[in-house]
Image (cartoon, rainbow, N blue to C red; front, side):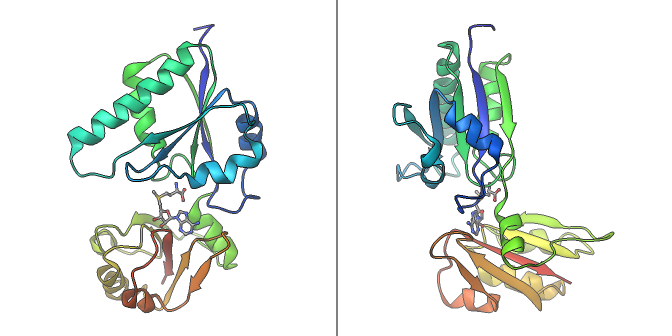
Amino acid sequence: MNNTGKLFGVGVGPGDPELLTMKAVRVIKSADVIFTAASAKNTYSLAVEIASPYISPDVPVNILSFPMTKDMNTAETAWTENARMIAGTLRQGRNAVFLTLGDPTTYSTFGYILKKMKCIMPDADIETIPGITSFHAASARLNRILVEGEESLLITSGAFGGDRIRNVTGIENVAIVKAYKNIRDVNQALKDTGLYKRSVAVSKCGRDNEEIINDVGELENRAPDYWTLILASK
Ligand SMILES: C[S@@+](CC[C@H](N)C(=O)[O-])C[C@H]1O[C@@H](n2cnc3c(N)ncnc32)[C@H](O)[C@@H]1O
């Protein structure tokens, strides 16, 4: 393994360029090759934009395609192909940095890379550098306590509606990412569980066009932006 490079999964935070850790900055600055994910439909990467002040101009940046599909064969093939590219870089003795928005262990494409790397290159040297999640940035932005004392916090996705919220009993606090689809049912679930009154949505937290939506019902009258989350509490 001496001549192989190392893979770093690096969280770059939710958008504010000052919300990268010092470790993330150091690792990005010393990368030989940068990787990140984009949907098959576009090649723009916000993660690269956030990290760009720290990426040396001579370092190659590879935007890997992660198709957003329910077809598991197509998805698995793409993840395997992407992990092979990264493994190829490591075998050349080069260090690779996989950039991801927020935190790499939280609803991140880095999860797919980790799984596939364990099959393709089980002895690969891999380090995950945590990042500030979108919901931590949002609670900080609002000066709102996310969870305290003996309370619990449910972190969930709203992409398929509100059943995840309904199915957990006694929720005290919830952070709902991907609150851009099925927003009516997400709101209904918040009402059903007594969490609606103390709910707030944040869109594009920490970016120029950030929006704080105090009445989450408003989200039902427009197509919420993909970069929207909801914080709600009893
Ligand atoms: C695939 S998840 C990525 C989560 C990310 N890894 C994290 O740690 O926050 C994408 C969802 O995260 C939330 N998100 C990410 N960045 C955000 C931001 N700047 N403002 C509001 N929500 C954001 C949105 O709910 C979006 O649909």
